[in-house]
Length: 107
Image 1 (cartoon, rainbow, N blue to C red):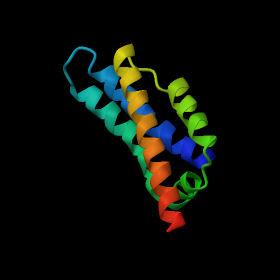
Image 2: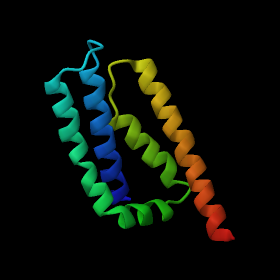
Image 3: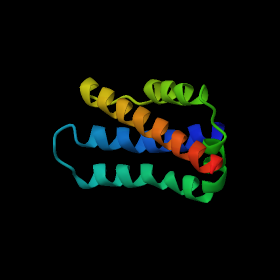
Image 4: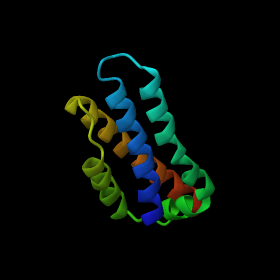
C-alpha cells in the first residue's frame, strides 16, 4: 500500500497548495506557479500507475480504513468543515471503488 499512499500524498500536497493559494480568494502568478510545481509530483503517479493500481486492487477490507486514516492525518485544509467534507467524500469514493474492484474480480 506504500505506492498508493505516496500517490495520495502527492494529490493531497497539491490540494493543500491550492487551499493556501485561495486563502485571500485571489490567485496571483506566484501562487499559480506553486500550484503548478506541486502538480509536477503527479508525474510520479502517472509513471507508476500500474503499481499504484496494483496496491489499490490488493487492498483488503481492513486496508480501506487505514488509508482513510492516513488521508485524515495528512490532509490539512484551512477550513475544518471543508476538510471534513473532503475526507468523507474520499471515504465514500474509496469504499465504492473497493467494492467495484471486488465485484469485477468476482465476475
